Amino acid sequence: MTDHITAGSPASDIAPDIAPGHALDSSLPGGGYVGDPAVRAEWDNRYADRRQLWSGRPNGALVAEVAGLTPGRVLDVGCGEGADAVWLAREGWDVTALEVSGVALERAAGHARDAGVAVRWVHAGLAEAALPRASFDLVSAQYPALLRTPDAAAERALLAAVAPGGVLLLVHHAGMDTQQEHDSGFDPADYVWPSMVAALLTDDWKVEVNEQRPRVAPEGGAGAHHTDDVVLRARRLR
Image 1 (cartoon, rainbow, N blue to C red):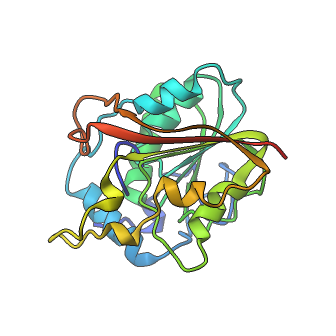
Image 2: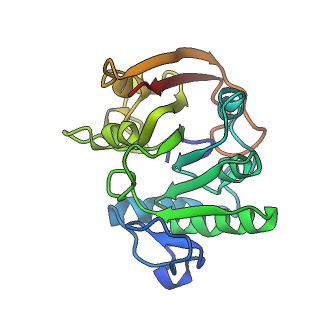
């Protein structure tokens, strides 16, 4: 979800170019959400509380790491209000953007229409979405709120989506994985962090970047107070 670690709208209110979670055809009518209803409700409520939650500009680590890549098919995981997806589309990428919040997707689809770019929107959780395996030249997950499961479903879904020769780019706020549970109820132990994904990489992958660096943060928006990123960039060899 753009800039972050990730009242609900009925399915009939979702913009018509948002596909149900089990489909990737942007011409299909809006409809079924695929995923945990409680997760959708949590994020719908968070977005509904503010007219704009994030900065509206693409994440700095994404812009830096994509430079030099040949545009192809990209999956934007946790696309939020769509700033990264719109930027990628403007850069010539064929964009599929996935998000659990219908409120966020409505905003994202509106931003794409205003920008005159085409994006394929998918309303689903990552682990539940029927994404085509090994078919994306870039899988981008910028500060995603991916819940941990015993079978590492989210981590494996990230890796499975990358095509041979393609790149996984996972960026998160440095140091959050070692924090204690917050009074707000946020517990870092509940979420997926870059080190967990890196631990699953086999000889089929080449790690190109795995480092902590100062964050190039868009001004404004939730999460702007974080100063450092952890950036994991890995290329699938076969």
